[in-house]
Image 1 (cartoon, protein in one colour):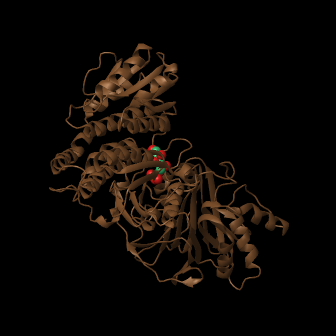
Image 2: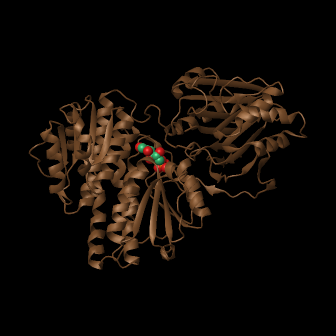
Image 3: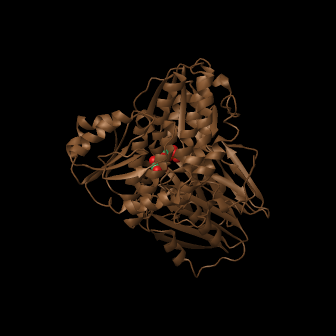
Length: 603
Ligand code: F6R
């Protein structure tokens, strides 16, 4: 989803802005632009498509000496991905970039048009800059005009504005969408939609809160909320950019698949102890008076929520329900105070999930966020949070975030089970041992990767894929299908194995590919008969199992194991690699698939 960067200082702003935008590419975008204000002149560049197009356009432009600059990657919401609709948007003497949606833009646009203002784009964003210039005519200062503009906007926005007449200034505001303001050692100022563009430049940063707005210039930072000046609270930023590079892999997604073993060790560290699970960040009182757990999320995170629902009921014996956040928002849900409301999100910024968290808080429920990004909106809003510790995930198709979410939720189910005395210490000890084995099963075996790569050439066509499994292997099947859809653009569905004969089996023929998840440690025989039914109808079967299935056309063998969750994680890796290799063969952009955004900050 749209990304914002900003810079004020004496370094070459073009490079800092373009570098920052590259760091935000993972959020997804279809056009990009920058505006640099120097010596009372604006230089403005926009390009549709990849950032390289913008880089090509700006190759002869330099901005040595003091300047202010703003930049943006746009993921189209209002209006097509064209240069005219790309940010920054121009008024007469000012430029603006914006992430979010201005919900009352049509009324505002009409009022401005009635007052004679001409609009160039189809975007909601353009109203911000025109409204600012309209207000400037009567305001006592540019800051007053900006403050008045912000107070008129409804919806979500993270926005930066630069204007002639205040050449050494950037105005900023944040409501709903993320924005971070950093300062460098020499007093330079940086803005970013996440901290990724700031790392290596800024040493400390303010994670802006909803309702924050203000102004930065050479003299410093003025921060306001609700018309009152706020004190500045800085957090130290990491200086290590290396973790965000590809490390010799072809794609970030591939690097992130290979990283899963290491990041999983971090996820487990200090949490899997000899007697049980320890979460320093939560207090057992969070579970006092709780009779139900509600898990809410979107996309891949929803799949880890579904996986967790099996584990919570099985081990903690607590009633557990799972909700798709975009549905939950509007279903007028029953929110009872004895429910613990858990949101799961890689980014912590997904608009729908964030909204459900606000609803639960408002209804007085205890809330917990499972998230990969510290200081994200969800982490800041909920009563408690557990970080997944997966590190920055850049591939749009989520891999290591999913793996670490499932591990955290599995640990949480055992933590809850112990509090509720619902499983024996012997069983807990056994599972602690199994948890410690996850990093081992996540290690990608080069030969296995090569085998899946070879096999992938047989799965580039057909009229669809069914990924099937039972129990926790059903959400894993959903996740396998989502991965394939996202990066190969082939049609794939996930189904519970036992559901096939209730309709979907009608599609079975040799061009219908079934990816069958067949763990030996959980319901093997049941799953096997479902797969046999498909094989009998000539569906092409690729079985993922540690056991040879005699009716399969292809096999992906995993290591025999004594616990179904270890089979789960090893199958997950196989599914990720299968999608990756199919996508590569089809010539797709693995890391930035068409139409997708990494962080979905609009509903
Ligand atoms: C799929 C994927 C998405 C996200 C979804 C929620 O690979 O990444 O389905 O899982 O957009 O995002 P988060 O987890 O950031 O809330």
